[in-house]
Length: 339
Ligand code: AVJ
Ligand code: FE
Image (cartoon, rainbow, N blue to C red; front, side, top):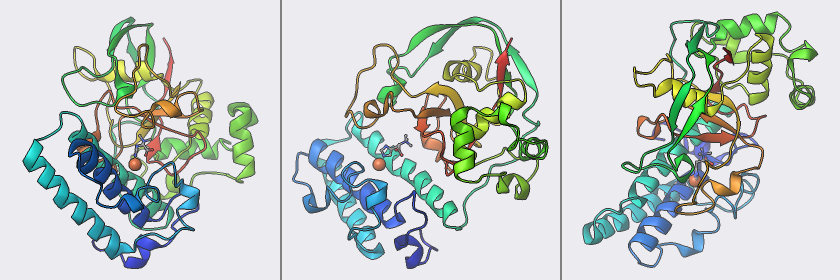
């Protein structure tokens, strides 16, 4: 944030994203609600701002046309909430769940802000090189896999309950697919060969007149391809007689008893074959709007975190989700195939 001109914080960077100052006010309002009001049982500092900075009451499309705090006002709001949060902490001690939730919320919004910054042409992190092309597949034997977060540490409701799945044998990419591999795909007719695309994916590509991926050309050849949509990831997989890994296959490959099999995780979010839904026995906590209202709404899941994800947020059980047409995420692809 420091180093960014005031204009970059307040202006609309892209139609799909709110201005950065909205995220700052939202981070403050979230802390005001959960730590000052719910945990501290004190009145909110700014109940008058709650609706403006609520993600559902003020969706992204509305964040540009309403009056927001300016950059200095948002920073001041953050500071004032934080001092009340610290007073509550002093008085009540940490909440077993809410402090970590609010902390990670702020960290997750830094990635959202980086997505907006990239779309607005501002500097953002790029993935580091990996040792492989992404086309080399490893064999994983069939067996039971423990999926989901244990109750011992903080985790989101959608990572629970932990349960066992029987996973048939499969193959999975040793590394994410690189820019060099993506370029070969594009040059080999990747954006032209109808048979590699789903009906929905083809319609998306035609509507937005997409012919390739600029960052695969400008990015380092040995770094994972980044900012691709789920539709593109799926087409790439089909072009290689492969498919996307399921969430279970991905998690199984990084939590094996003999150690993680995969290389290059955490550089780009990895699109999976699954649509976002709850594990068997899912219970919403602490609020339905975190995960549950997105179940069955056509979002695809992503795993692993990216170079824009703060380390504290990343974990092998963390699940992210977004629409299949979105290219603003720091997302790439890892291949999978039948054994
Ligand atoms: C988990 C990244 C999809 O940004 O919508 C932020 C995280 N939840 N504020 C999102 C989140 C509430 C969420 N994702
Ligand atoms: Fe949020």
